[in-house]
Image 1 (cartoon, helix red, strand yellow):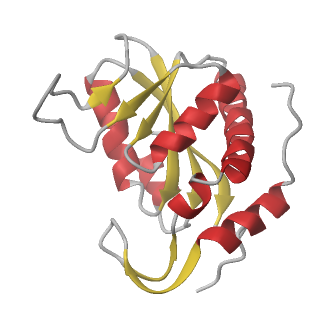
Image 2 (image 1 turned 90 degrees about the horizontal axis):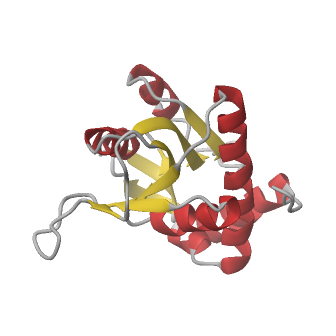
Image 3 (image 1 turned 30 degrees about the vertical axis):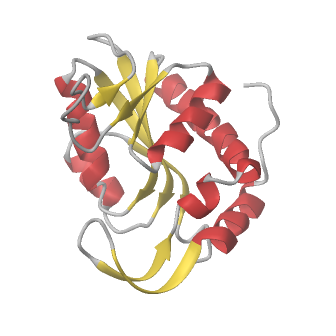
Length: 186
């Protein structure tokens, strides 16, 4: 990757300024939180998404280097992972697939959109991880389709067990930012 990487601290502040909401929120995990990171408030901004894409590209290259294995493809889960994996795909020139939360009941009736060959090595791109429940589900869906999951790269780790849960499930997780990096305290 030959492009200049963004200033991580400045990007973290920008993400927090755009997406941090305060109040009482129920998260996908069922937990209640006093803050919410609305990923759509940063992933729909081209000036932010392009910078995140560069950092995702760097993280993907680092995972490949450390494992000594190249990913054949990237994957992102609906809905929040789609713009992120697309951005990473553009930066890395790796094709991607999109994962639906469940199989659609019309058309091709698939849960996975795009082309994935059995045996391909995949890195998942995820938006915000709390417990990593959705990320682990995505890993298992990809494996059921015949892929080997190398790792998941998440944009924001809320530091509420995602990394530990991924490790317990046998998966590697990398993160671009933590809630601490974004200056979030509860």
